[in-house]
Amino acid sequence: MDMEKGQEIAASDVEKGPEQHAIDVGHIEHGDGKGEDIEKERVAVAEEVQKKKSRRVAALDAFRGLTIVLMILVDDGGGAYERIDHSPWNGCTLADFVMPFFLFIVGVAIAFALKRVPNISAAVKKITLRTLKMLFWGLLLQGGYSHAPDDLVYGVDMKKIRWCGILQRIALVYFFVALIEVFTTKVRPTVVRSGPYAIFDAYRWQWLGGFIAFVIYIVTTFSLYVPDWSFVYHNDGDVNDGKQFTVQCGVRASLGQACNAVGYIDRQVWGINHLYTQPVWIRSKDCTFSSPNMGPLRADAPAWCLAPFEPEGLLSSISSILSGTIGIHYGHVLIHFKTHKERLKHWLLMGFSLLVLGILLHFTNAIPINKQLYSFSYVCFTGGAAGIVLSAFYLLIDVWGLRTPFLFLEWIGMNAMLVFVLGAQGILAAFVNGWYYESPDNSLVHWIVKHVFVNVWHSQRLGTLLYVIFCEIVFWGVAAGVLHKLGIYWKL
Image (cartoon, rainbow, N blue to C red; front, side):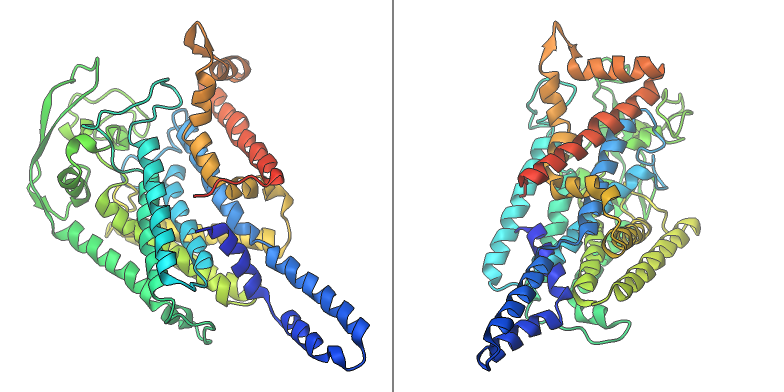
């Protein structure tokens, strides 16, 4: 399913008005004696409408590009500046916006791609195929098969393969939200009546799906009993390698690291050997005095500090469906609301409302903002932030026409999958690292990092950050621009 193509069609569709009627009128009046003039006018109007049809909503591409850029920045620069890396537990850092921003823009794109569904069975087939493609790439890139960019090896022990990951979560949300959109196509309105809640009522089935996901998550999180559990720590060369640890639980409704329902379900469903082995909670205050940075393990650190935990697990992925639901709502607004003012008013009101709700839930300690658990307050806070950022891009780029400063984000957004795989997942860097001299540490990438950035600035942290900005983000902005000019795009 070509979601970007759907974006173009839907965006132009909502802008249609008298021009299309002018074509029809011109056609009718062609035989009343004004033949040649009417024909010229008809052709001119048709060309104008065609231009509208080919126009994309540039803010969506820029938003998608921004998300990819943030991912590259926090993944490759977060090791040097750990305060922009994922929050060790409660709270929200720059890195914690990446996943919900991905899911938000996927939801927006679904609204465009499935604006019209002439054949339900064909649409379901395309959705299923696209979901399977994302699952395949997710397993390949984050299941342990790829060791890019640092280790020049490949392959994974199936006893330890990681089943979950970024693309797997996106695939689940896409599949669920897209299927609801397809199966409700016959009850969806072509025109939404006026009123502040009319758009919510028109797409009530989509919100019902999100509400069901919310209920499943909340009920499971606060009612499931979590018993004691144990694990064997594996880390070659570590003093704790091979030791078995037991975590004391025997509780319900815990939102802490050790005994939450999210981790318990993943251990039961996937098996503890198939979970992510380097959870960010090892940077929490309970585990190191260097928190929120990495540091030596505390002597009195609890056992769970060394335990595996899946940040893209099953229950938290069910909660993440809400991020896609919020996104598809923003897409519906763009389709049905006819003026910039109407769209921005609705988007900003909803965005700030979600943002405030998330903050209130967090600071009243009702439900802390937590990316690892994908808590409801986290959904609200990041969903509101996504809506506000999209509104800002839409105002700057599509309303005020300030497109040039954001072109590199647009280009990256148009080729998001390619930049994600080759850039964010380090596949291109691994390819370059494969051509080394005498030692794998003596490759072009390592030489550039050391001699052009670290040695020049006399700082490992600053040098690393500048390398990420100029040799990764700027490079991919230029590369994506060249590919755009050549008409080359990689889409699932």
